[in-house]
Each structure stands twice: as C-alpha cells, then as structure tokens.
Length: 219
Length: 232
Image (cartoon, each protein chain N blue to C red):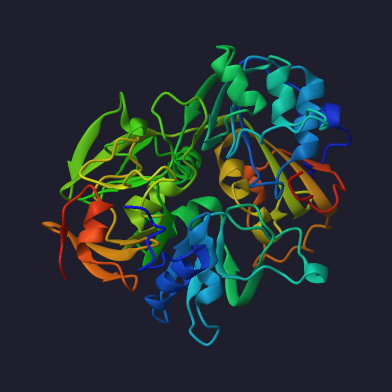
C-alpha cells in the first residue's frame, strides 16, 4: 500500500502540472487556481497560445516578471506580481466574474481536497465549523467554466483516499469536475463513475483502486 | 461649476454615520483606498458593516495592526461581508470571540451583488453556491435544470475607491489590476469617496479612457499614495 513500492514513481508537483498542461490545446481561455494549478502555466509552451484569466480582472496574464521589471500594479489572484502579454486586457471584477459565470472559460484547473465519484468537489474548507473560511472565486469557477479539472495528490498525507464515493468536507460545487489529475493517474468523471485515462508507469489498476475509495472503471 | 474635489481628509469623511455599510475596494494591496480607510479610522464611525474582498491577513508578531484589522480591533465593525476570512487573522479572532459577524460570499456573487446594487437590480438567481453552505437559509429555484440561489443586491451607504487619475467632474481611470472592485463599488455607493494618485484638468482624461464616469462619484481627494506594496 505504501508509495515507497519500488515498481512505480508518483509524479511530483511539477510532473502533475506538466501532465495537465499536455492536455490544454491552443486557443483555450483558462483560469488556473492557487497551488499546483498555477504551475501549469510554466508547462504550456510559449508558441501554444493559451489565454490565461485571473479573477481580479486580467485576461492574457503572463509569467512572473524578471526581478528588476516588476510592476507593483499588476498582481494575480494569489496577489503575486505577474505580467501581461501583448493582447491582454483588464476588466472590472463584475466583468471578470461574468467571464467565469457566463460560461466563457474553456477550462478551469483547481486544486482539491476531495472529489466524489459523481464529480462533487470539496476544495475550500476541511470542516463546516471552521471560523476561517476562504471561498474566494472557487465556487464561481467550479460552476461557471465549461470544464473543471482538478489536480491534487491521490491520497492525503496520512494515506487516506481523496477520491471518494461522497465528499465528507463542505462542497465547493456539486457534479462540477470532469477530469482528475493526481500524482498517480488521470481519471475522467463519466456518467456512471470514474474511468482511468492513464496511470504512472509500473502502477497496476488494482494498486490504483486500493488507493481510491470510489470504484474505478478500466478505460 | 461642478467640483468634486475635497481639500482635506476630514471633508472627505464628513457625515459617515454609525451603522453604515462601507464598500471597500482593492484586491491585495492593489487599488485599495488605504488612505481613506485610515481616514475612516480617524473619523470615528462605529457599528459598521464592511464589504471587502479579503478581511485581512494573518498578523505577523512584529507588524503594526492597521487597515481593516485595526478597525476590527477598535471594535468598530459589526459585520464583514467578504470572500476570505483567514483563520488566525484579527477579523477571524473577533468572529470566534463573538465580537463580530462574518458573511462569507463567493467572489463572483459578491461582485454581482455589488453590480446589481449599482444597476438597480434588487436580487438575482445564480447557480454559484447551490448545494453548499453558502445556500443555507436562501431560496433555491431550478432554472434550466440547475438549482440556483437567490442573492440580494449589496448597496453601500459609502464606497471607498482608489483611482489612478481623476478630474473635477469625478471621472476616473485605474491602473492595471488596480481596477478590480473599484468601478462597481463606485456605482453601488450612495456616497462614493475616491482617493486619486493624479489630478487632471477637465478634458485631459479622454472620453475613451474614462472607466468610471463622474455620475457615480461624490467626493475626490488627491492622495499621492505611491506604488502598492507587496503583502508583508
């Protein structure tokens, strides 16, 4: 059961981000969430034109600036300084979320705590009784984007599954996830369950099922 | 002659009453009316409802308590309406201790509630938040086969705005990601107060570049605030 097994190597954060980036075609408008999703941008080759959206009103966001070329007026949704590409534009917050909620984004990539077999997503809180609550734009993105992909570790730090029959944490949105990228596999959420798209080399279907609460289907 | 410029912070803050709802723009440190917030702290109004994207970061031990955290610490805030309430922040501690209420709202719903207020739309249905804690106690109806939550417009008695440039009619421009909540909060405030980096003569801001027309603006104060800082 341990990931220390010698016959396969789980992907790291960079590997997961690169795997997601592989599947994003030119011409898509994409919002990348906080954490591993943010790293996806580094793995989309510059010649492949993908337009990145940031909730605080940026379309055509570029990478982090070189140290001496920082613009203090230009930050992303994580309030890190970024750049804007030629062709980029700024909008106010209501228009920015009209982009999100109006179904204009081809894709949103979000981090997750848990995903259920039916595509339910929990990614903003680990307990309904927490005083601290950080929803940000996650609920809008999960409901509004044409596709929602989640990228996360396959199991928790202490080895419990994150891909479940039902989420136990408070939901971000119901039935919103279409694809799950983990450090072990890529899974599609299909009408009757979860289909395995691919797995890291050396991992067997049974190994993967053993780390997943929801029942998996072979591709 | 229309002249919306005020000459002092006291004049800018004049008449803000106890119990007011204050819309406070900004995303991170960018486009945030820090000087006006300091002015509000000085002005003394209490029992306030503060609407802002994020209710403050977790305070570092050596850091002076300022901004929204200061207003909360002074006991002047009855309620925050926000998308981020961070555990361990002054605001979250006040909520935990029962000294303040917090309403946590999805960011798009927050923006749309503010926009709706400015546009005269009293309420709207949205699928965002359906089936989550956010929908608790709210009317839910199906539209197009999707459950949608009834959300109410969120007007402000006061809106605090940071502009890049302004003229005496109150026409405003913004800089880069400093636009964020500013244009919609300016529309939704009954009393919209602006701090601006630059002052322009009438006609100097071209009609094509004005983002917020002066009809939404009541008072403008020139504050050469300098560049936004990175979060400490």
